[in-house]
Image 1 (cartoon, rainbow, N blue to C red):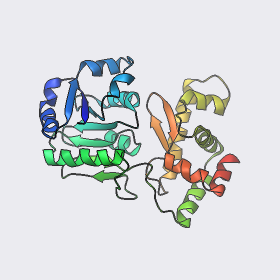
Image 2 (cartoon, helix red, strand yellow):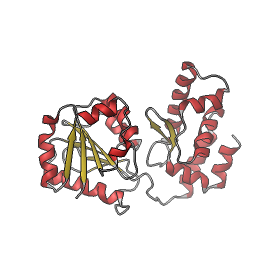
Image 3 (cartoon, rainbow, N blue to C red):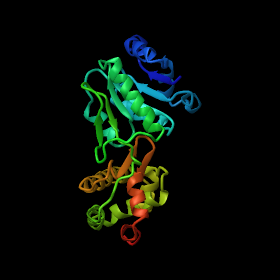
Image 4 (tube, rainbow, N blue to C red):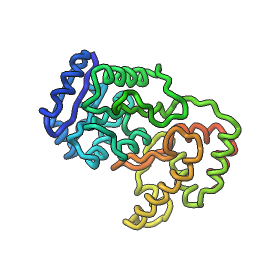
Length: 264
């Protein structure tokens, strides 16, 4: 049996969803207290390991979701955002960044919920092949959105690598240095403070942090013209930045791309 943890401000607001999940033979644990513990940043890592799915209720505001997601992040857990009727711009952004695995509506039927969870389960097991090139996949007639697997293998043409190379040639020196630092870190997260210290070589201040945020946004924008499945740089709220695994893999396997970053 699969276990679902629903984090909420009001348990009564989750009764309908809980019934739908239980009808699908999911074991559901619904908690306001555990949500409060997470909000207070009390150590909760050990507790999350008992669940395959963590659902963030529509009673939790967007800023709280952004704080919660990094605390939950685990390759063995699928993070789902539940909304009232429609996904917000922030929900879409978190999907594209790979920080959410799906968005569902409280109005989704049992059938739609079943298919969404089954697809997530197959993705987790590495068995699901979603539409190539699509950033977000629509799974139902209502909301039910899912991001594609960020590690999905895609066939690359010479033109794909040319576009990537062209973008990297148009990065500024600071942008190239930031990209280089993230590549050097591999799949590890690099804190904003660590990047600022490497770039400006002095005590980090608010001006440096603001400049870093703007520079990372510009880097993401420049890479949008390529065929990357997700943003070039992943923002992990409260933790720092990490390079898109797909971009990392392509740079490491292409001497020309690797040379641009290394010599930048």
